[in-house]
Image 1 (cartoon, helix red, strand yellow):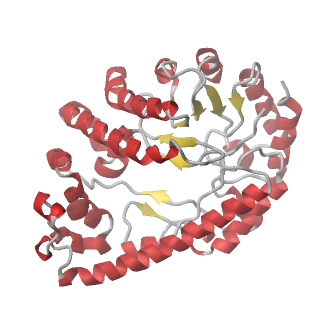
Image 2 (image 1 turned 180 degrees about the vertical axis):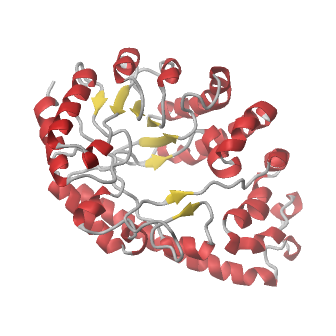
Length: 388
């Protein structure tokens, strides 16, 4: 049985460093990640935490997240980053973003989400300037000089983080742990809720701006397909796309709305990836018991589905002949439980999910904190009960 845990800050915790190092001390964070895989060679693939540039986000004035190490932060060094939701697009701006997406992103989204880029508010984009960029567009105005210099610094900081991630991945791969997936995407509805409208406004938008939301979802599908097109002929040992499904859980929307606004546009992305030989990895979040019937609609044998909170016996019964199912061990057990409890819960989970194949072990979310003795018990139990 494959063992592919998604790691959050656990490698740092076990190695004596913190989440802050993933933002500001890449060599230390890399060493912790490498040491994790050396310590637990029974893991089959790498789902390592990503190192991100704290400096780049400081320079941009990023509003949508807070992170360990940011000057003035309340986020503890040991933590992951924390998401802060804003309405970067108001309810009366659907028409604008649909008519002029590029202009909206430049003039409104960037300055709102990254206040250090406020100068973009004055940039004018229209068909004439797209064909013949002129000084009157604002792109080349003297007021933009400081902003372009700032963008250069942000890009340099991002380049350093990208190089650190690539080097870390190469080291882990050399140890024998290939990446579990190679790209990420999002369900179109989640893009609107996460980055544009935030969670609560999307609740009312489903009723008051349903047509606009659906059109925006369709636009996002086309943009994501364009980004994924390079996977068609890419020379990669692994071709999987990771989709964290943030807002599709039970109770967030009625079944009819879920089908129309969430599932149908997302299914277009899934079908496209399957068509070009790529495996979609659907990472459901929250309760998903009422959505299992929709998941049965997936092309058989082409997808993987991770579950956080679901009746795994029913998921196995309904989806066992449709998709590979993943996950569901509560990581809080590794932090607060005993080795005996870990052994018992692993056996219970594997007895439900593993018979007949089609199951990959993981926790129900990223692994943050754990007692070393419970990690040892986890892998001993997986070795003991995971042979079918």
